Image 1 (cartoon, rainbow, N blue to C red):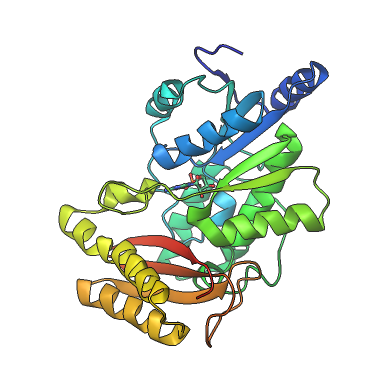
Image 2: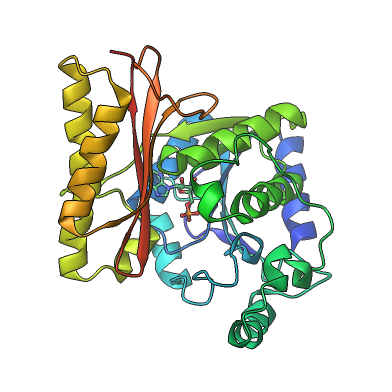
Length: 315
Ligand code: AMP
């Protein structure tokens, strides 16, 4: 289908109707869920969707359900008109941008939630950690996969992600959904949720897109000063170094991990975690690497928390 401007849909019933009319015409639907402030990483998912499906929906929704009160919901960057321009720059564009105001109709939306956070922050009350303000009682928890790594430092994060993705799946009813391996744990959690709950949806994981200097693209990179950005390159450089060491025969995951930790700390980063985990079940591999693993990192540079990872096949 030749494309110009995408249709912007904000209402979930209208979104579902659009998808059903497409399906009635025999078209397959691709969904690319995002939180906006798009970059080449997101656009690579759109390009991949063009290879696989007839029509493409990009959702742009900053999901309050995945942010703890102490996190950056209120400062998460946005540029809706810029996002539309970027989507138009992809050959074929996209058919629909689904941009709901609030997916938690019975509770607080993003603005109300931010207000609530401000009130709570003062007295250290963390009772809104359970997201009760959103008016939801139903949350999806992918128990084991969400335990480690980002799930440790962000206890409600994956519950919020899995739930909003399930909502998007139920609203958009896609055939294929496209996720980036940049958020490796998230991708595995969504795959598992789809398998366990019998969503009839294929989940595709796309390769990480990096800037010319190797830093993985992220909407949060905009908050890095030039100095912090230089420091942050230690993430990707240490990952590539570990990969080279592994390719040259170093199979001890602890040694490889330590080399990554050392490089990031030396550059000025504060480690949240560095883990060598099984690519499928994300369990830590604290021994000789004999099966496909992925090195996963989360580290702080100033107030910016970045994540990155690299898959390594057994050595
Ligand atoms: P976000 O808007 O950050 O929630 O990301 C939306 C989707 O884009 C997720 O599936 C991410 O994994 C994916 N994504 C974000 N950054 C990149 C990147 N640098 N390369 C590939 N995919 C990415």
